[in-house]
Every structure is written in structure tokens, then in C-alpha cells.
View: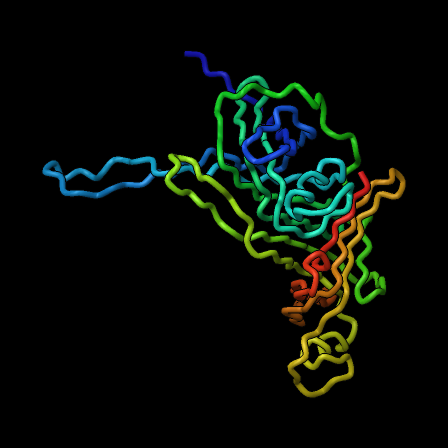
Length: 312
């Protein structure tokens, strides 16, 4: 018996924007190297118990499918621009704002020459970008589709992935309240689109995947130098002493800019509200870092929650 194993580092995602729901994009626009890939047709198998004179457990029945998965990668604007458009839903060029009618994507999950699964009518329902001192900046996208086709024809274009340099934490500038203080050691930022599948009476696959409520949340690891922000979180003012009902808020922008090669991503939020500002101790004597949680404040215009601008 001959057993031939395959290298685990060849798996690749191809992706392209569809012209409309139900119309697969058979010519992908990006080819993406990965750090994580959990894509699967995700058939739903359940057991249907009933009495049985043989005293055996019930077998499985297939009652649906929820195609999709999570892909993780290092941040490159030329690759991520498509997914940023898909999770935001509105905008043009390289400037993306929140919108209800998010585009549909076609995704090819490929092990070259061996496996190709095609996912049609996909939406990006969650996106997370994160980085910290001494690290690269990562992207993670949760994608849900309506249809999966196994044994699909493997794309031949694009022939190669982007040659852009990965954006890293030394490229990052965090501006809080209009000021760059150089005191943010790490960040994470997540866009959630909510919603859920609607299956209907249309066979195995869901008929739609509408978006739900739009939300942005994240965290900043901030150097603790004095008690001003801790007081502001609890009182609403950096010099406050009495607890109040005021929420500590400020404008926030995070820029990752490889200026040498003119490649950048800017996440700009009109106003965030801090949800936590814990001041820890460290028995080893390390500098105190506050892992502050936040979410964007509800705006009169949904587009002001978060604007993403890319320079591929």
C-alpha cells in the first residue's frame, strides 16, 4: 500500500466580488496566502431518536448546510481591500463605510492540484484586525455563504499573490482624541455585521444571509502613566473625583502605513466609548499596561461609525 502525504502549507484562497447575488464570480481578483483556513461545506447532521427493538442509537440525517468558515492572514492592503469592502458594505475606490447592502463574494478554497471547493454568494459577517509591539498585523474574516460546490475547477488567475510587504506594528500610529501620544502597545478592532441565515423551504441550502446590526468594538493596550484616564473613565473628566453617568469617549484613528512603498490602511472612528479601563498590577515589576475595551458610539449617520481607507 502506498500512502502519499501532501504538504500542509500550500492551501490558498482565491476570491472575487460578484456582480449580483446568484451570479458566481469565476474570475477571482485576489489570491491569498493564509495563516488559518476553516472553510467547509458544513452540512448539518443530526440524529432523530426513535424507539428501536435492537436498542441501537439513531443514524445521522442531513438537515441543512451552512457553507463558509474563517480565514486568517497577514495584513496587505492589496489583498484586504476586497474583504474590507465586503464587511463595510458601502463606499467606493478605497474608502469603505458601513452600509446595509453588502456585496456578495465567490471564494475558492484550494489545495493546488488536489482539492478545490467553490463557495458562492458569500458575505463577510465579521472582521478583526490586530497587532502589537514586535508583531505583524493580522486580519481575520468570518465568511458565510449560501452554496458550496466540491470538486470545482481550480482558478488559474491571479497567477500569484500580492508582493506587498506585510504591515507590521512599527508601521502603526494610534491617534486618540486628535493626539498621537505613542502610548498604545497593541490594538484589536472588530467589525460585526450580525444577522443570521434564512433557510426557507428551498432545499438543503439557505436562501439568504442578510446583514443585521452593525457594531464595532476593540481594545487598546495603553501605558499607565498617571490616573487621569482612569478618572475620566469613572467620572467623565481627567480631574474628576465623583462617579457620574458620563461615558468616557474620544475620537480614535489607527493608521498602519508602510510609507516607503505607499501602502497603508486607516481605520477612523468619529467617537468611541470606553467600556473598561482596568488598572492591573504586576508582581514581576513590569510596566503597568491597561487593556482598555471600547466600542463605537451610535452616530446620527451610520457611516460615521468607522471609515476604512486603504492605499494598496
